[in-house]
Amino acid sequence: MKRPKILTVICVLGFLSIVVAFPQVFSPSVKKLGMFMPAVFGLLVAFSFMSYVGVWFMKRWGADLFALTFFAKLIFFILSDQVGVSLWFSTIAHLFFLVVFLRYYTRMDKNL
Image 1: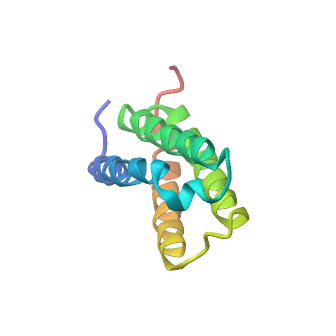
Image 2 (image 1 turned 60 degrees about the vertical axis):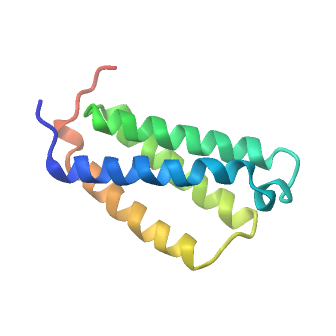
């Protein structure tokens, strides 16, 4: 099954955002949030990466995991009081990604 170009672009942007987000797991700003916050944020980044890999291979679990990770990240940032302009920009971009993923959801493979 051929992957649509829009999904390719979104996945490449997602992979680039993971490259930027991964060093933030070890940043002092995340460490000062609490003892387990770097671990939680690291898991969210890892699940984000896995969701982009799933969408890259046109698997439904990738779109499902993307939606779950998106909402978990949103809750994480709101509860840790990390609300700012970058969060709102990221939220709008990820909502667009989610709509595109849902548009192609029926063409994605159900199997692992």
